[in-house]
Structures are given as C-alpha cells and as structure tokens.
Image 1 (cartoon, rainbow, N blue to C red):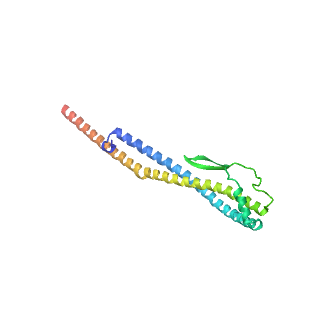
Image 2: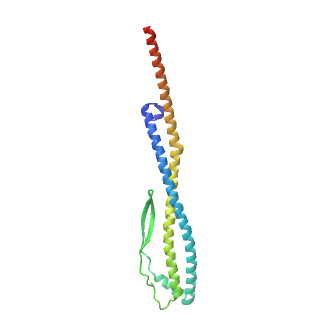
Image 3: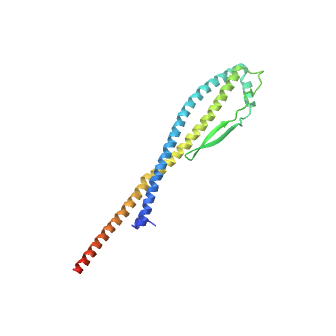
Length: 208
C-alpha cells in the first residue's frame, strides 16, 4: 500500500516511524563509517612505515646475497635455497571491526638453527638469510595490513552508499510524506471545526 495516497492518522504514524528509523539508521551508518575510516587511516600509516623498512632490509639482504654468491658460488647458494623447506607455520585468524572481518597473520616460532650445513657457507650467507627472514616477517605484517585496508575501503564504500541513500532519498521522501499527510489532516481538522461551529450556530439560531 502506498501510504502517500491515504492521509490517515495510522499512515501518519507509519511514516513518522519509518522516518525516525531512517534517521537512526543514518546516524549509525555515519558512526560506523567514521570508525572504519579512522581504522583504515591508522593502518595506512603503518603500511607506509613498513614499506620503508622492507625496502631498506631488502637492499641489505641483496647486498649480503651478492657477497655470498661471490664468496661461495652462486650455484652453491642456489642449491642451499632449494633445500630450505616451505614454511608452513603461518596462521591466519580474524578480528572484527564494526562487523568487518580483518585478518590477523601470525607465525609460529620455529627453531633458529641454520637450515643448511656450515662447512661450505660463510657469514655473508648467514647475514643474507637473517635479512630475508626479517623481510618475510615484515611482508607478512604488510600483507595483513594491506588486506585489512582493502576490506575496510570496500566496506566504507558500501556504508557510505547506504548512508547517502538514507540521507538523500529515504529521509527527504518520508519528511515529505509526513508533512503532506499532516497538512491534509490539519486541513480536515480545521474543516471539521468550522463545520461544527456552523452547526452549533444554526442550533442556537433555531432555539431563538
């Protein structure tokens, strides 16, 4: 039923309730958007700092790797690289921020003993391995942050779209409906009041 067609007190109450819910929904969505925006901006700052740290450590790691390639031979380094097992200690959980599921990446601590023999290696390779392990650690953190930023951005867009729909469409629509119905009811009330006055006056005249 289109309540705009029936200016009744019942439909007025329906329109007022819908208007109130729309305004409340907009306020909640606006608060959610602001909270998600703050979370996203904080993560973006962290991502920028991590990018800088990773770039520096990557540079140091490649210099150490080049030194190891020269000192013990690139084929030896390559064979050692293929012998290192795949890391399966990475776990992903999730945390919720205003209903948005954000990843939390963690890595189970493993033994720090070298994963290769020491007879044919040197300190340059040890340094390169340590640097690249640090790069992996920071990259996991960066992946967590950038995925979170992406999910937050998508949800902020959806939240903003819903908030705009309420603010620019639903709220003005029901404000207009409430006003129109209220105007019609007020006019009917005035007409009824005038009619009763006329009837009362006619009765008084007839008595005289």
